[in-house]
Length: 246
Ligand code: GLP
Image (cartoon, rainbow, N blue to C red; front, side):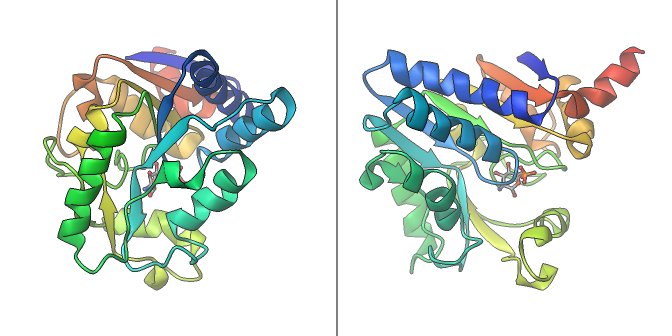
């Protein structure tokens, strides 16, 4: 596991986008695994800037998103479908039929899980999978206690995740309490993983991850089973490691 520590959120975002841009520019076809949340927003802005100012084209890029809330229509402003459309897809030249997210409003969620896993195998695996990290160490929506051999599945969100994500809704009661997420095994199929973390609220999770203790109560620790993981973080997210080292 490599770790790249940037001065601040802006440089972390630029660095992550530069890694993705370099892959797209040097390959005929790129498959990206994408994450939502606050953390990758700056990276998406930097990718859009690359498209607008350097002519980077996403016409031969395919995307597979990690997760979606159950019960939110794609038109709901807090759905991850809406997020991706608003923050990235509508601002670059990616053909929309090359973008995939799990459908949180499918009639049969178990069929949807199988369908999505099949898509990951047919379109992917991602050349680069972007991950954020929850304050409790979740990746995608794989909460503490998740099976490391899990594929795409439905999950009950942890109370701490509902609380953390309440900032995007009017009240915590509006946060859907279930989601559909790629499993840890699905995530580990990716060829390369970039985990982004920014801010002091992620410093504990980053420190715990760097302790290299594999524990299902800390889902991100499953990444130690992957051969090519890079943490792209900022100083604040690194701060607990730094303070331990004096
Ligand atoms: C969310 C998402 C994750 C994301 C994480 C951190 O709930 N399901 O994919 O990485 O929590 O979010 P944020 O970047 O907003 O801190």
